[in-house]
Length: 287
Image (cartoon, rainbow, N blue to C red; front, side, top):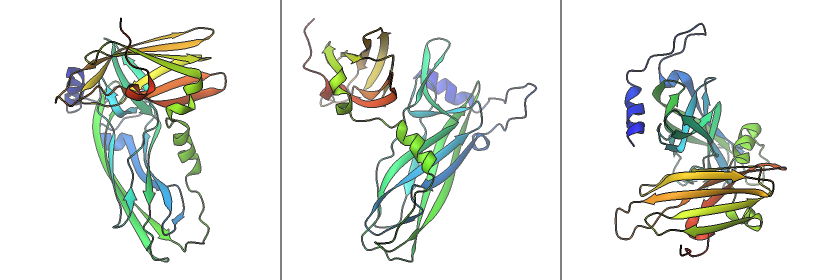
């Protein structure tokens, strides 16, 4: 989008804000600390463990979710592992909605962000050896100005015998990320309903959630489908989110990608759920 392009170009000319506070480094690397971490202190042959890409922002600054929204750039990372290891897709904790003047909406993370991937170790790992992992990451870090940044880090883990005990590592960091990871839609299906109207060019989904005190929706990144608008209403009995999509196929085989993350706040607390409009709702209704 035009707003995204303008914001990106601004990073090459932006200057740190002036004021009475401490000086701010005018580069993305100085505002974000990158660290590759693991959920265990050692690994065993054949087991699955978690590895995390930890970005820690300076106070008051933020980076962007996998879908940056109307402005910003997605935070990306690429993990490399020794031969024989299988590294799964990075999982992003749910972001926060950030609105700017002019109805510009973006999806952000501030303070800390941990991207998590499952890693499966090969069964023929040799106890007593070490396994080295590496990450390369890119981000856009913003407050009232933005700076592009990138970084790299590596991590070495000991390999222990299959029967040997391993201990959790960075437990609080991983727990905070897990708490914001989307749950499957089946976990909320008993208290939620979905209806669809419109055709493939402009589908509309209405999500109803009983007992919801607050609702928000974050659309997944897509090259063909954009969330044109979202309308949230919350009352004593619960809430609704109406999602209007815009679909522009690139090939005849393309179908609307109406996916995202629904944030639900109830008396019990906050939770996030993966939504897929092609699966969660009934057939389109006729208007």
